[in-house]
Image (cartoon, rainbow, N blue to C red; front, side):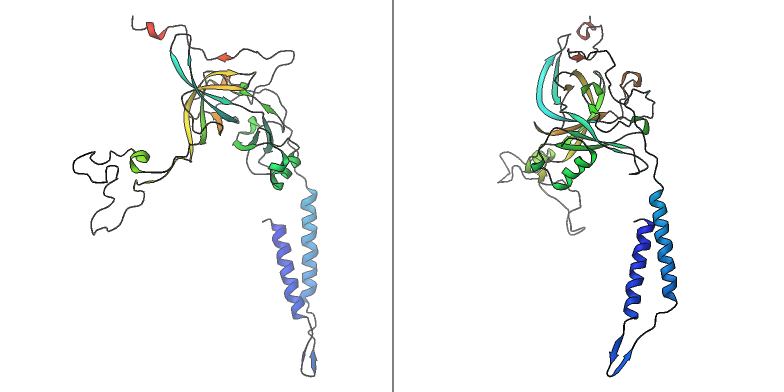
Length: 327
């Protein structure tokens, strides 16, 4: 709450109290009327001063930050925005050396900057990214109002990515797969596949009881969960049956094998959390950082008079056959 709002609340409370104290009331045949005190005059002056202060604060407008969509130089402390993608599934590819690479295909569906947050207004530097399309009848009224206030199309999924000041992008900027480069490592966040209520063997990898001798209807039981009379309880955090999956998890250092700018597809090596059709959030890896001079900053901008390549971009696998190193 701002100081002006607190002042208005204080003034309204004092007005209410004094209005009650200045009312006339009857006691039998005698009518008693309390005359207003000199405090009323002080209160009027205080109200006038608070209103004048509020008007001055409204007149003092913060300078408008101008963000230009142009390439810049990335520093070691710079932090770029991420992207929202849809998990399409898994497959396998063979690289130029004949090695099979397990692949997860991610689709970057029409990502744009739906809101820009600055230190002057929101207190942080961040970009809100919108993905996909959605009809107004399938959104709540606050969501529709948010998109119309920002002047951007209706989006199916929103995600906020903290960035540094030099990585801000203008409202409505389109983001594609060229935001990342092949051979780069990224961190992928998503909601894991829900498995429902599962036992200790599947949920935590317990061994279980004997399969034949010495076991009676307790082959998959977790066994004892505590001690004797002391402490006489089960400690918190004990691995027991319960709901499995359906939680947000991040897979770090995922290698980008190939990108397809035409279809906005990213091929990454290995698995990422989530089922087919789920949203995942991709950002630059925290631990295995790429060469900053090779990353487009703050994002990829097509140069004037140049055309985007139509061929997929594959990571550099080197000139030495890994299968011939042992010879």
